[in-house]
Image (cartoon, rainbow, N blue to C red):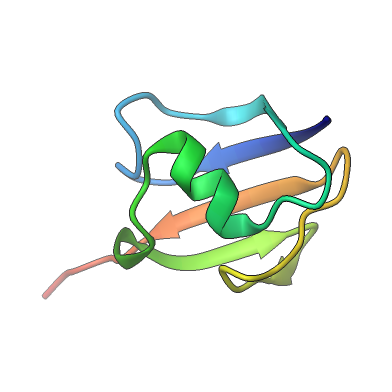
Length: 75
């Protein structure tokens, strides 16, 4: 098992995550994390792992920092 730290921006989850530790199995992907948090990939505009743009298939590493941003609308 490994711990990653998650920060969500906007309303991606029912509770705001601000560096919240999440436990996942070794070798888990960003998609695995989203599944555990009950966040749909369609709701995520940008995902960063340790400051680098990530895709759903990106493999997470122990102690990594994950930032998730929703789509933003305005006019």
